[in-house]
Length: 189
Length: 212
Image 1 (cartoon, one colour):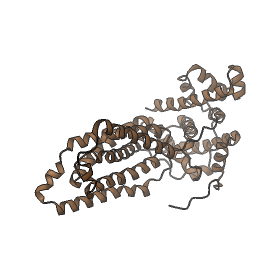
Image 2: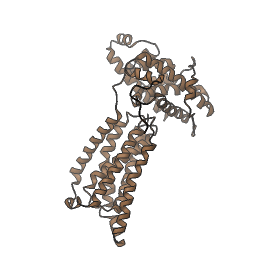
Image 3: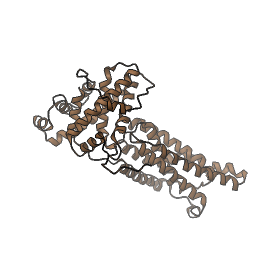
Image 4: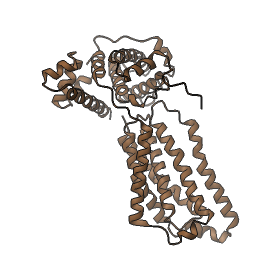
């Protein structure tokens, strides 16, 4: 066993951003997810290309990875760097996405660092299946997710429009994201 | 949905209360152990020769072996539940119970006449052992699978199988004081069989409940 660094002493940008996010910094979390999204996109595009699969569904893999990272962020050990944890999840989800397209043997890139250096911006025209999956949510949950993601409303504005408390909106949003993750998994099987 | 839109929704989702997987697994172990003890009390009870048995080496070897198996499998289960886990170094500890068991078998073969080998191996409770250990392990496995759903195992079936192995170790420990067969020949034959059953069930449960 190597000596563990002292808690909070990790000073790579991702680990710092995640630590800030967990402490409640929404802005840091948003920047981190955008950053991770760009790296995962580059990785997924490479893996899809090598598997001979068109990159029409790359954005799906990116979004599924981001959602998984969000729902499983408590499994990150704050004393370890974030990047290997992100890579493990991204690889898992990209392999899943390729299997779904009938690729049995998938060998995604081992070297995540190169994607950290060569991120790819989102294609503004790329839409994912997530909208289809939104249909599987309960109407109220779907309304809340749509309001915050597609319409860009704040929690407060959404709460006001639906005459709900902000806490209730947050709880409903969290449940909705969890169901979205489950719906995604079912669409894989 | 665009990725930037999804990110807006994710960022608006509040920070979850912190989940400490290690603590949850410990709690599951405690609850499962109590469930296992309840089955023991209600359905099995101690063996008639408990007092005499507790003075033999064979009995304590049996208990030690169960613990030596339950500990590394439990720690491995916890490690497998994290996506960036590196279980290799820990996996070496899995050898410990097998080395112990093999040593016990060798000593037993040396000190017991050959004519007694088969009767000792078959014992009086082969069937009972193979069925009862998985039964005692069931509450532990169930509790473990429930808490492991908060984890993110890259290999859900393997993680489930490992949880099944840990549950079998606990089940074997509880069973030890009920079963009068203490010979390492018996233990080395039927306990692993019972453990394999638990691991098979655990693998199925892992595939079904631990995928994410």
